[in-house]
Each structure stands twice: as C-alpha cells, then as structure tokens.
Amino acid sequence: MEIKNTKRIKVLENGPYEVTGGIPLNQLRFVPDRQGVSMAYEEGCRFLLQEKYNLCRCGRSKSKPFCDGTHLEGFYGKETATHQTYDQMAGFIEGKHINLLDAESLCAVARFCDTNGTTWNLVEESETAETNEIVVRQCCDCPSGRLTAVTKDGKAIEPELPQEVSILEDPAAEVRGPIWVKGGISVEGADGRPYPVRNRMTLCRCGKSKNKPFCDGRHMQNQGEILE
Image (cartoon, rainbow, N blue to C red; front, side, top):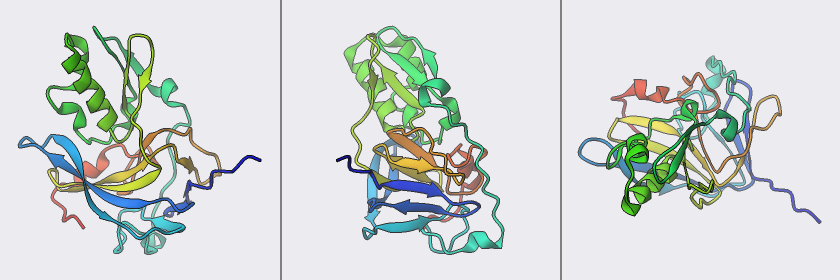
C-alpha cells in the first residue's frame, strides 16, 4: 500500500503559507566574510514542532515568521511564477571541467556564489579539482536552487537536505531573507495546482516579489531594517 506524503506547503489566496505534515521549522543566518559574501549557515533557533502552522507571506506580521492576520488589512499576493520545471528554466553554461545550470529567475541574492571568485568565472576557468570542489560547494549552498553544478558526464550534483523549512536571515545586508524549503517538499498554489517539486526552493516572505510565490531578491530593498 502506497503511503501518501503529507508534507505540503499551500499558498493561501492573498494570505499566508499553510504548512502541514509536521515539517520542522528553524531559523538560519548567513555567516558572511568581511566583504559581506555568504560563507556558511548558522542556526539561530529551532521552533517547536507543529503538525500545522501558517507562515507570513505579506511581510507585515508582528509575529514573524508566523502569520498574525495582518494580510487581511490589504495584501495582493497573486502568484506569477511559471510552472516550468527547473530544467526548462535553466540555461546551460559549459565549463572546462565542470558545467553549470543557471535558472536566473530563481535568484534570492544569498551571495554564496561569490566565495573565492564568482561561480560563473570559476566554471569557465576551472583547471583543478580544488576549483571544481569550490564550484560544487557554491552551487549546493545556493538556497533557491538557481545554480546546479553538472559533471561532464551529465550528472547534476544536488546536496542531501532534510525535509524542513528554514527562515533565512541576512545580517550582513541587514534584511530578512526568504523562506528556504528543503528536501523536495511539495508547494501548491492557491488554485490547487502544485509547482514542480525541487530539492531547494526559496519562497517570498516580504510580499514584494514579482515571481510569487518564489523569492526574486526584492527583500534587499529593505536594507537597514531591524531583524527579528
């Protein structure tokens, strides 16, 4: 008998994300270097495990990351994202010793792609195994899944991630980052249509994205705000 996967995130019309299936929730901070480039993740806190909870999508809740109903005062959260698969969205970049897939519309400005030189330059110039390892690490650290390293024999390299949700914070930029959905959790639109399942996704939580429900980096316009 087939066991149905109950872990799901439902986008509620002009409302929050409804998370069901007992999905673990934590807060992660980007750990930057002196230039503000993201080098690693650091856990800030882990929230009490709940079978069901609603996460703020409008950016105005006083109970972040949870919804407090503020969206009822007026939030237009119409989804505009494509239902294309990652492979359909991504462009192919051929490198010397390792290749790259790049779905630019998914960028969440996490800046892991800038460590030790940009991923794109490293792919084009890679000559050593060490450089290839840096490319793979940068791609795997990309929370939105924009970048994927691909071996010369065509194998896409994906990190092993737990099925959990992480609230991302960006202290270097002084902004609240997106919601990181990991491990192939299903995201369903307000119309009931599911988006293609991916290992890494970032959902908008500032309410400003033009690629809803996914993050497009517009939270960076809020630089200087106080993190909670």
